[in-house]
Image 1 (cartoon, rainbow, N blue to C red):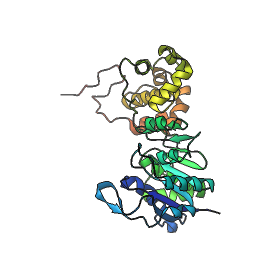
Image 2: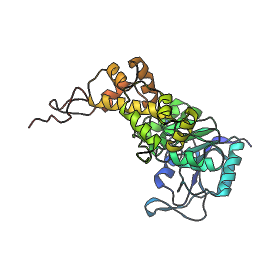
Image 3: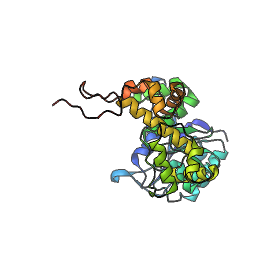
Length: 339
């Protein structure tokens, strides 16, 4: 059957987050055609029987059953209630059939657990909120989980990190299928940025899952964070853990959900962000303090991960301080208030 991409099915669940389920409805369920947006047909689909209970005791009724997925050109799984709970088999079958019949499948945040359970993410890269990434990686080892990006477009499947990143992914889908003007029209009325690239970082610093202090990986991570100003590589870390590179990569990914190289690069960029916010050090000096040979090496990595240049980041995010409390170096005391 020929599927109309402007027909969007949003699958809803009992006990799932109201906000997460409302994200694609907010993008595709409001008529903005008078402002230049496309006309969409939204199909709210209930994956569970009866009235659905959601956040704050709110109850809702989705008027369509899973058979509506047969008509949708885009199927969106906006959430899931519990990473450890297997989704219903009828839903998994319907998703596989829709995917085989050329529907674009979108999993927002925990919705990726549903896509993974259906086998749709095997051998693919998937974006995931940093908190849930280790669980997704452990449960579905055939999925390459990326907790450092806002969303991932893998052609016929799109995944995103949590909450606001779901908006970014939905707007990306609009931009990809209907063009930049359509996405901008929707974003303007929603008062959100019209485009944040998928590779832009999840701005939250990613805590490492609890690792015993005497654990080899825990020691290696601590060492890396203490020596970010040195130009070591992943092989150095593997040697310190007394593991082969392949074994180190496998154990590290099982623990964190990302590769050691991704983690190390992200930690260097996070340190650079802090220095840009809290000091007036030149970018070239900051580059060397976080393990890059020079600013020319830092700049492209910073822009790819953060989504803006280092100088723009400094201008936008630098902490506001009084003229009497502005340390020029991270080695100077942080408190210098006038009494």
